[in-house]
Length: 198
Ligand SMILES: CC(C)(COP(=O)(O)OP(=O)(O)OC[C@H]1O[C@@H](n2cnc3c(N)ncnc32)[C@H](O)[C@@H]1OP(=O)(O)O)[C@@H](O)C(=O)NCCC(=O)NCCS
Image (cartoon, rainbow, N blue to C red; front, side, top):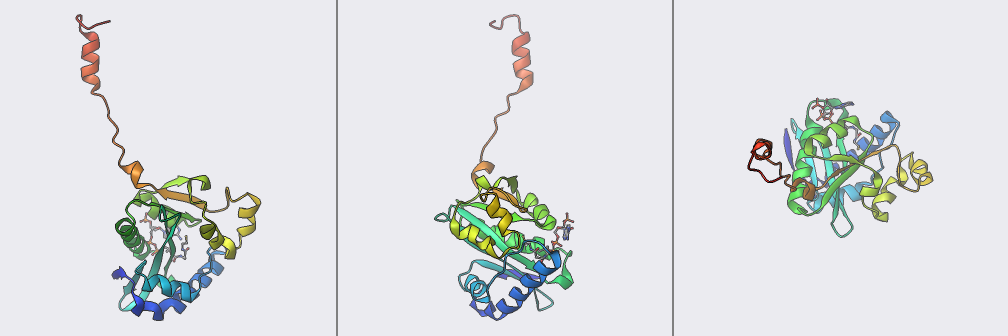
């Protein structure tokens, strides 16, 4: 398997990837946003996506979007060729796009919304945590991406506060918090000592 940053030379695969998005949405019968080939091609050309090949054939893809002046990053549009799913390709691509996001946007919070159990498992292993939509970007640009999802009316009926997707967030700042745990043996012996102040 080859996992690498996509380049302008990969734009030849944009049409096929968009067909996979449409087919996946039909098969799952649930929310997967539609993407245009020109948008996918732009992500490839700007160095904001990861592409995978197995035995020389296109195997999968995922891209990065930024919001709120790059304080939020989304790893979006994860898709794997239906013929080779459940063999670790999705996990490998997601790891690649996560690493690329951390490299290019180290200060950003990385988030996603998903109905996919596979994606929830992968995100959890990467350190994401489930959150309410209030913790995610309020950017119109992000939420308008849901317009092509069949559940969009549910999202809007709930003032964009909840929908069928689960919000998941990786906050690098949270990971830096060091918790100081006291040495309970020392504390206990100090309390037991007859000379200890009361
Ligand atoms: C979601 C998707 C990218 C996963 O790709 P994949 O190559 O099959 O995933 P992996 O083989 O790396 O599996 C990753 C984990 O998810 C699990 N998994 C995969 N497919 C699953 C499914 N349909 N249901 C439940 N778990 C699943 C795997 O068992 C694995 O977990 P484990 O490591 O604990 O065993 C792929 O199914 C896909 O392209 N689906 C259509 C598009 C889509 O739904 N994209 C996500 C939009 S948010």
